[in-house]
Amino acid sequence: MYKKRRIKKKIIFLGVGILLIVALIITGIKLFTHFTSNEYKLTEIGYNEKEVNNILKLDDTYINYALNNKYDDDLIPLTKEKWFVWTKYDEYKKYIKNIQKQPTTKEIDYQDIVTKVNTKTNYKYYTHTKKTNMNLGNAILVNKYYKLPEKYAPNDVVDIPTTYAFAGNQARKEVFEAFKQMADAARSDGITLIINSGYRTYEYQKNLYDNYEKANGKEYADSYAARPDFSEHQSGLALDIVTYGMTMDNFENTDTYKWLIKNCTDYGFILRYPKGKEEITGYAYESWHYRYVGKSLAKKIEKSGLTFDEYYAYYLNKE
Ligand SMILES: [Zn+2]
Image 1 (cartoon, rainbow, N blue to C red):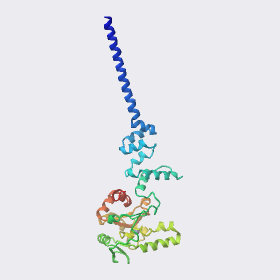
Image 2: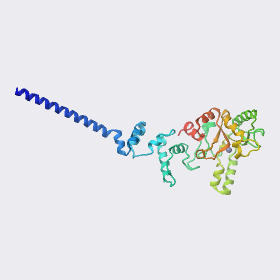
Image 3: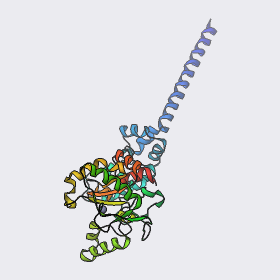
Image 4: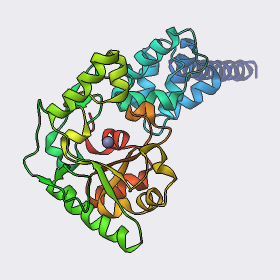
């Protein structure tokens, strides 16, 4: 009887002991998992609960970045941007730092940061310039960052008859053919399209720029004319289109302009410098300046609602 009770007691002790050990092991594992969890590590780095939840929803690349770097309050807002590109992360950060140094900065506009870095407009115009990729044919980008090959001159330039342009104008053959079709269609709608300026040679652009510079300095010249090799007109793919008896500044109020905006992509042209996009294109709004890119690309660009500079960066020449 006595022996039996002792055995019973032993069994109880053993049972309780095992339970305790199991409980300890479970707690240990739980603590271990907690302290080694990404959630814990991110909290330790300085992210709050909301930020941690947001980071854990991102791809592994971003989670690893967050785990292996100091607290970064730009990470979540940047990755949320539609056109965010991970390979440009350092550039975004550098640009943000530069902006924050300026005394006028209040809040960081992440959409603006991403757009400008993607289109290289975070740099001052004409610095960090690069030769444009000529293999892209009608889709080449020429702006204050991407330049044409030195003293570039297309080899298929044609004279434009005065029924379609003011005297002395030229354009690349394909561009003029497209314009001709467009102008004829416009004419049957009672609209007259006239080319005010088409292809401009390197020498012409250089003279134009130099004269502005001589008169009032580089800054002034840059705000009125493109530098030689940086002008779309030198590519032979751009046309300034107006109508008779109208100044450039008034052009946007004409029926001709309305017709062009509605129909130009059907013939392969896009409005190159839209309103409100000055900081991306590098040019003030020009209701008269159209760029030939070919029909299918013109349609795609129109549908995207992007400037050509942005479309180029996202779809045509990712780098
Ligand atoms: Zn122009």
